[in-house]
Image (cartoon, rainbow, N blue to C red; front, side, top):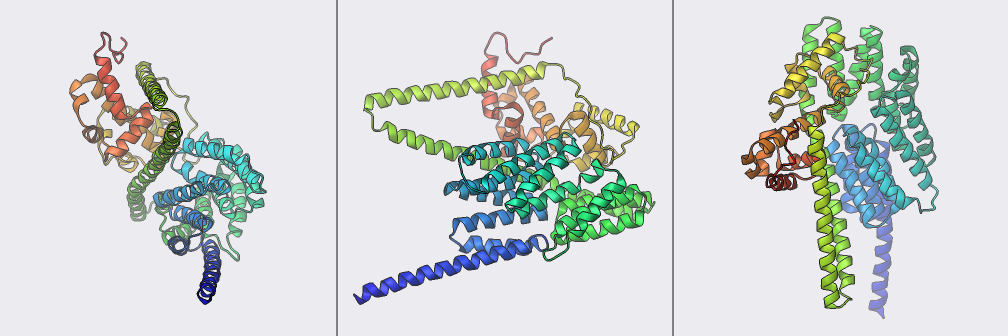
Length: 519
């Protein structure tokens, strides 16, 4: 009896200790959230401590979401992606739909920053279907806020700045009711970048200065302060008030340096170089210009890694779900007789293989047919008024891009926006804007599509290339790895490179190859 009583006391002590630990971790997460926008590195340390020690799934999800925001503030998007993915995986593993919804909505700004707008829309669509059946107080707010947020970024992508601003404000009305301060803060930072595009200079300045006042207080928001000061620097530059412009930029740069945010360090350094160019201060101009270009190279590589991390999660997630369904299917089939099982399984496998092959073949045909069609000239976007690209410069860059496409320079692995801008004797902002407006895509998509089309032309015109390994094709077309080549190849053509080559080999055996150029 005594031993049983002793064991019971030990059990109660364990429960009390566990409850105490949970309370401690809850306080730690609250502290991490309090310093998130002033000391993101400290917030990460606290969140990682909780991740290493807590066994509470809700706390693990919260810690990962804090890390997602903290890494985003620091501009470390690969780590932000990994933390966001981990939060989503844990929420899915415990079938916590409200937390899945929260993780999905929290990932939207990051995914749009990386140019993965379709992934963001698919995530939201899949999760919203699950969440629509819930009857909780916050679920409708997350759903409406997430929808408004998706619309806002979509409008931004189409340069509909005024509508985007309205949608961000609408999203904030829902997030503030939850309350979801992190998402509201991210929206405020994004809206700060839109004021100059929507209002005149004086009105935009008033909005930014009002927003700047909100960054102080009990819980300062230095991230928002950095963004606002950067925007004010641009406004003062347009007003030719160069001293105030430099002062705003320098203060913003101090925060960016403290956060170790290379994206903003690059952007602000580029902006400062423009100010010193206007002041004809050559040493300062070249100094900041060089700094910006150095950061640009690092940023491009980091963004690629972040995108790959997302694609890896998507692939792994799909594989896991497929494996789970297959096990369930197999278990149910075992109940049936051996003969019926064999017939049914054979039928399903053959049907799946046929449909999959048919889909791949249709994608192959669509890609080949689209390549044969004359390239339609895209309607030109209006070049951002903030850049003021001279028409002569714009036309010159378009001509240089045409020559660049005829060359093989895009197959160089070290090709970057900064290096191409230097080759064209221009700056990265001008070149990026011209590519966006004339090619209808960002720099990475533009280069990757040129590379994929180049290697496909090689595969079509030279049968020897059909025998080469994927790693060789990746290197030949300018990709640094097999995996990145395969990911981009599938994104451009709709099917993996191995399947594409297999279909191309099959088509060569026909009397009239489907890849033959139309004359």
